Amino acid sequence: PKPTEVTPAVIMKSYACQRRTPLKHHNSFLTEALEILAENAEFSENEGRSVAFRRSASVLKALPYVVRAMNELKDLPCLGEHSLRVIKEILEDGTSSEVESTRQSEQFQAMKALTGVFGVGARTADRWFREGLRSPEDLIRTGQKLNHAQQAGVQYYTDLNTPVTEKEAMVISDIVEKAVKAVLPGAIITLTGGFRRGKEVGHDVDFLITHPEEGAEERLMPKIVNWLEDQGLLLYQKTTRNSYLESKDGPARPPSNMDRFERCFSIFKLEQAQVNSDTRLEASSCNFGTTDGTQECHSGSSWRAVRVDLVVSPYSQFAFATLGWTGSKLFERELRRWAGQEKGMSLSSHALYDSKQQRYLHAISEEDIFAHLGLEYIPPSERNA
Ligand code: DCP
Ligand code: MG
Image (cartoon, rainbow, N blue to C red; front, side):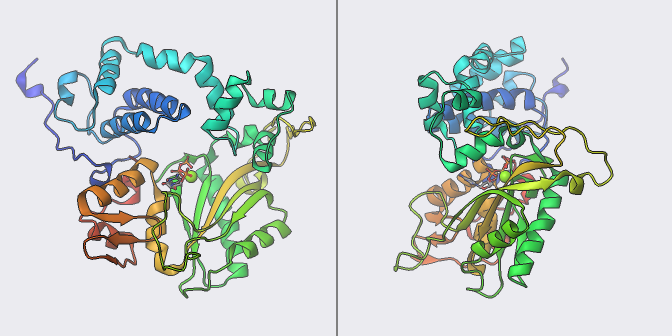
């Protein structure tokens, strides 16, 4: 090959929040493989290993070219020995034996099926796996004791594992808008999560709600939920109260990455007619049935179940909440790591605390927060780390 064909060097910053990561990139054949290994590490609750694979994949997502040879990777950050071995195998053989055997393994497939039930995490799924259970059908057949979320998860399993389309997200946005405006005029509703980053499908639809008058948003969620329930739009909901200010010492730093906003995990009953106003209704979906064994098989049904997350934030925290709820999950993690390790600051979805100055930094926009952190502003569509 002519020397001029060498791929130009790219400057790749090491934190994902310092880079632009588009939704569509050039190296899916590698990133999908690395993400199988990341997912498998999550199933065994090995967070360090999972994050290492996710960071490697994320670097490849930010590359402006297709990786064809190992020497094109030599100056890139975050690529550990294990990831490099996997990449090398794929470049040479087309597939990685480790990735393929993981993908085919009974444990991986069972963990995927069981954690695919709403309300089931890796720990519960792993316990079930060790008891010999492999699928949601097994949970029904053996009469496993399930909590309310998991019962809904089994009942609407197929629907909840069918990706939510942009069109469906828009219809749900209209419904949420209507509900919120009905109970609190002047409220502001933002679509967050993957759809804000430009994703065409999602596993759920995420919304953040606030009101310009601080305090007007307090205890708003039960009102929204009541409105939706009165309209028969909810199949399931669990609301948790805002616990951020419950400690008397002011806006204390949340102990974990979980935020403490008033939040509602819900399952919407979405009328198909509203989504496909011009399409004839087809047999849609067939779910696995209720835990008492009755089939909830609404083949030809006029509606489907969709996961929706609603979050209410006070206006003063809205910029932080918007940034925290837009994702991607890795981008969020990297922002917090950058803040802590490089800036001596602590970032959450509620606030940014500067340890050196011993004060909270004010922000009314996401741009303000990037500026406080000494980072170039990255728009949502390029936070697909
Ligand atoms: N989030 C986070 N950490 C969590 C949960 C959520 O940082 N433990 C933030 C980042 C996510 C956003 O909230 O992007 C929404 O969470 P989702 O799980 O809904 O993820 P996405 O919307 O990004 O993807 P999708 O819903 O398509 O799976
Ligand atoms: Mg989402």
